[in-house]
Amino acid sequence: MLPDKLSHTALKAEKPVILALIPAYNEERFIASVVLETKKYATHVIVVDDGSSDRTAELALAAGAQVVGQPKNMGKAQALNAGFRAARLLNPDVVVCLDGDAQHDPADIPEVARPILEGQADVVIGSRFLDRKSKIPGWRIVGQHTLTLVTNLASGLKTTDSQSGFRAFSPLALKALRFHTAGLSVESEMQFTIQQAGLRVAEVPISVSYMDGNKRNPVVQALQILDAILSLVARRRPLLFFGLPGLFCAGLGMLVGLRVVQTVSAGGEVPLGSAVLADLLLVGGLILGLAGVMLHSIHHLVTQVRRDVREVIEVALQQGQARPLETQEIPSTKQEQLA
Image (cartoon, rainbow, N blue to C red; front, side):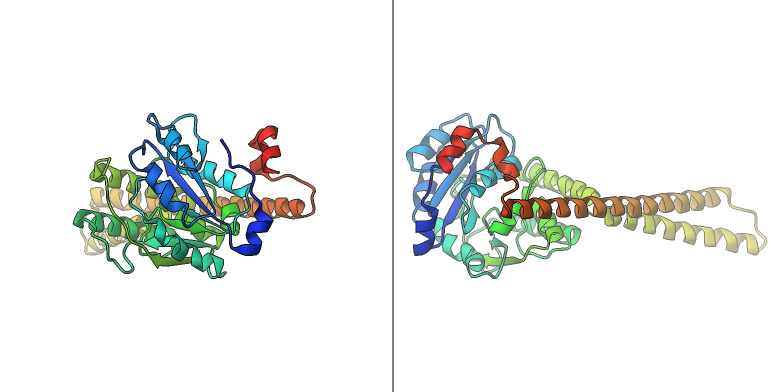
């Protein structure tokens, strides 16, 4: 079900509207306690049940959350998209996302939301590593730092905890962000999107508690995220993905070719193998470089068109000439409840 009607004007006059968004999949063990604790710090709590096969949705409802249900397990990215669509209908001052497995402390919500409420940021990341007081397993620290380093280099945006799921979003970020990746790499995709959208980012320290161990093989999980990051680089930064290997191949080809020229100049025979290798490296590098430039231009053009279309839609919305795209998927009966 979608969120019930809120007296948003009345709430605004007293205090900011903080909406807590909790994506959850088979979290019946923790979800009720997470919702109950979160309600102490949030005006409204939405749980996105991502096709759970247990009682996650039932217990979340019983604890007082509104539940947005997914027809099947579609992954965290789509769970966040569904939650964002529901959140936009309520026009909150800030949306705070946290996990449903009790690893995040809802008491940190005010601190995570603060930079947005003070107008200092559009996205706030709750970092486990800014002022680490929590006991984090060593393998997690190594893995998270590795993924953060790769994500930072690939996206061009520097953070200390790229994989943190405890985040806050301003109304502007809520409109700008859409997620498409599969698996557990949505936080990495978010970093690319934030950078390209020009959103302001802040980080605040948070505490974590790993109550239920790791549900997945950490090595497999890390490899899946790295694979997703490479795919994101190919799509979002093709000049980096294709250009650097192309430059490396071309440079290596020139070095090999130079050795061939030196050998021939000294009166030796043409080293056929080296000559062929030099040609292949030079041609391959040129092809990769051209592919990177062309895909970069196409990506830049598509990004600009999307940005222009979004601006036109926002202007039309402000002038009352169009309805929000995200509400067109909501049944009219539900929209009447939210009116």
